[in-house]
Image (cartoon, rainbow, N blue to C red):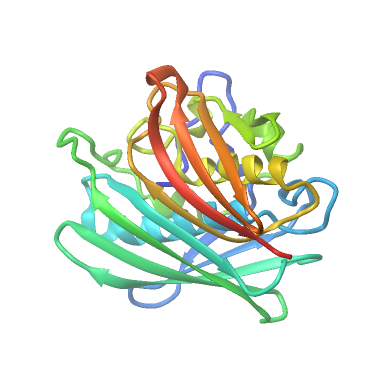
Length: 261
């Protein structure tokens, strides 16, 4: 789940706190997120906003709604999906609206609608959460996650992949290190950042494209890292597996992505 964390020992904040995303309440059981789009949030060499950034913001909003229901236990992302109507090129501002879909004792689902600053619909995302199986995992006492995200934060001064150390190893393979400034409330690699390594693996296999959709199934947390994503391409569709390389290469994420043709 994507929640801002306290400053790490290098004095830098959580990487996702630099994406310029501000969150407010928008009525009962609803959240609203807004962000001004900087070039550092776009696919390198283009003006197209990264789909993984939208995934991270969706994870944040749906995760916050899950905390309302499941807290103080830590909600864990089980599934995250993003579907775009068209490539978000030249977008200057994003407005996101989130609401619950299912509120259960152990499972929570929510949806997010994305639009640009001119109310043009960009796409929709959804998140599915379960309570962390670790009974000792608790949200920080006395901390309201929403208060931490009331201001946009940032600005991001380098491209997002550079900021978090995500690198393309070869065509179809990318790696993301486990770092203190990229963890979630459970101390494992943030689910939103795992979307970035999936995206980078796909874009390295299909250069010159951007993602139209991204579907992620979180199977295990990345506890050691790096998270290594490997993409197998079938036309415009890519199947991606993310392994926790430092943990005997256990499979952490199974994902599919489709690119705009």
